[in-house]
Length: 492
Image 1 (cartoon, helix red, strand yellow):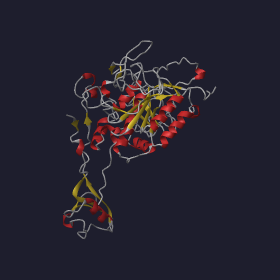
Image 2 (tube, one colour):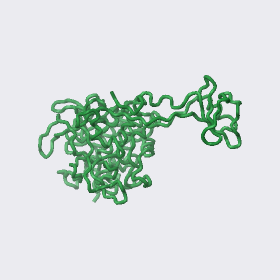
Image 3 (cartoon, one colour):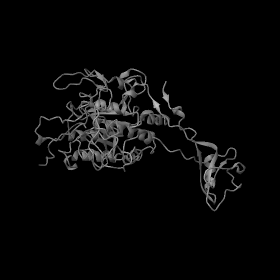
Image 4 (cartoon, helix red, strand yellow):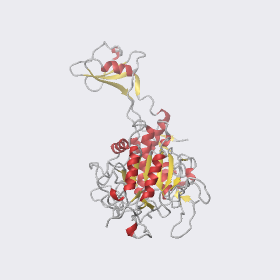
């Protein structure tokens, strides 16, 4: 029987699975099922080049490459923009490298040559470089320089989001870690400050937090009582290259902590909608929703009209909204990830396989590392469901209250408990923030432009399969590729 829109609809976070037992068991609300709908939570080594100079000298000065139409052989002279005696035959037929006259700019030479009859094209002699990478010093559990590399398989390696290249790209753009972009984390709160019995996560000292608000307690202190929101915020913006803890993918961004889920990880539809509208009003450029309404309870956008309207408002204001696809092993994406315009994110494992719990289906946009074990997919050679695989690690509360135990809010660590599309979504939110900060799409891209960029630069999965597909969408998000820009075209 359909649920009345007058009753609250609740969400809960998409994670909290003990490893290696990764099956997600929904928490049970005390409220009768007829009155509520659950929402599930769902000195630095740089690769051979200084980052500041990575994009300098994109082409050689003093020379250009000229392609002539078949009916017009290369002339020996007559170009005011070049010194014709220096032409040298190279490459394909009718293509020559020409040295420019002294003091002639590449841009002006190209303009002159392209206007000449018989010239098919003219372009700079671009300089190829090794791909850059930035490796922070964060020690992780090992307590050694760059110890993070042993833990954060989701940031580094073939099945990762390719963080080192993205970090390098943003350093070269002088927008380290996505500086200048605000990402709203709508979740269980964030350990973002010291206040009473609450303490800031040690690896958030130096992270910038803006416009915090708690829609559960209706005050300006959205402090985390569960650990989930702190984990999600850490994936995005945990302080990086500071000799503490682990790394955050978009470590230069500002986080807007918005608490919409209670200590049990549940929240009403109206609360989530209020959180979305608040984030838009207070300057968020990206909104992360690591939460879901299970498909068994909410199967139509008509059941959550307040969130749909809030998302539409966000998209009109050019705010990117990212949501977890859900942890139900279902063949349909959960809401709010299914709302048109929202970037829906499934989860993969260290093997590069679909995670066993990840929802799939039409409309899935991307996947990102969520940890846990492989799904049983005989057609995918990357999948090995009989072996235990690691979770995703990030610094968060190590002893939050649970099962009636008081817990505390000042102990932090790297619990091996987190797998889920909740972990995958913030990797995509962080990548979106890096794309916006890099200006590879210009100063103010639309959400649709950001999505297209992420999809076109994603790593196709599985190998050899057409994309998009219902299991992996356009593929594994690749932050390095998404923030790489083609060589600039010189102007006169």
